[in-house]
Length: 572
Ligand code: ATP
Ligand code: MG
Image (cartoon, rainbow, N blue to C red; front, top):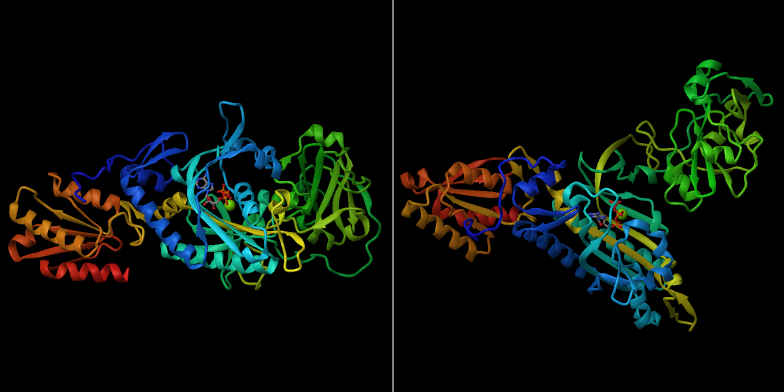
């Protein structure tokens, strides 16, 4: 490719409205342009990177026996109504009507469509396992589209769906897909880990997210230093907290004490001169008419995702004063003591709280708390679950090792769906005994455009992008420092021809620009190798090769360059 013809309008200045480095650099390097909120055009350089990611994905999908299909983006409302998600999906779904006022959506994902498809043509156990995939634009009217391609409203996704006759079959497919994803992200040059995830709104029995580590990542991940354990913070299930006052002495009956104006945990603990570990904290959520009181130890925080999961709810909101009053709770003094659970009022108590002896909790009365509370003895008719957020001080739930928190970008996710969609949409098959059973499904997604952004987020410096070789839009750029010098240009052109003949993807910077400008653009776009044909060539027939990643420069006779470049690419 000749730089004079390449449509990659680079910018000198940092775009002011972009927050994340990947977004800024893609704009500056002339890779993308904004069309509207969360909508982007991919210019040639970006398109080439996307093609490379797609090629890696295709290879790995074929390797595990997945077959490519192409489903329509426009999906009829009926199939979403049948699964029950037409109403649940809410405002994130782009909806439209045709000329006959029939309703459709732009696919945010394709479980409904693929299940309907397979339902039509697969009727026997002999036709499974079956895994279908596609790479296609997806549409989500995100509440906060931001960070360029990281969270856009139209984005490129690889989505795959597996169909099996049993849970064991699904487990095998899931593992194959999990391994394929690990290979895909390794080949893309990402630093990542599969982390245990919550299956959330989509439903199902198991899930992992593939997290690319990056400071700017939106996701919080906890990971172990000793073993491979990693989890989305909200999906992590910490071990039970040690009881601070573990002596076995009898604890007298719960006793009401006045705690005037002590509405916070700190205030109560200090008023009663007790450690916060001995107090119980309540956080109240609302979901429609239902009010949920989540109780954790005073020194812990509530994991709202786990609370929601207890009751099959996805988006919990903090309860307001009116909601509290409606069910008889007194803010600041909340307690399950003396209040019965009902359809409208749920108490979910953390495992660790149930281990406490001689604790303090509210009395549901202004200015009053109970002390000498033994939750095992005194909390009647409450739900018990692990609902506290893990901390960096916790031990690894798998091996007891040391944990730390890191930020991540979710580049992919795999789900064991089970029979949720096949049951809802009637996708059944006849098993070996001639009996009808629902297909057991898995679904698997990769954010292709987000992967490109994540690769930049992990690979840049003050001068621009530093592409992992496998994703670079071009592997090398040849820079003749003066295009008016015929001898230099002939040498550069000859190198370019040799590179191209060997299959090295190369840009020849034939623009009539100062060398400094060409070098700046080369660094900004991030070609892994830069070959400069300049003074040393005139003086001694040598050229300069610069490796973008570590800045090392070597000089060699021009005749040696093609072999060197070929080998470097093989090794990187
Ligand atoms: P997130 O939690 O980041 O909103 P998600 O869990 O809703 O993502 P999935 O339904 O799992 O996303 O979609 C599969 C993949 O598609 C994600 O792992 C992510 O890489 C990518 N993706 C999802 N939403 C977007 C978006 N708005 N822009 C770009 N990529 C996205
Ligand atoms: Mg996801």
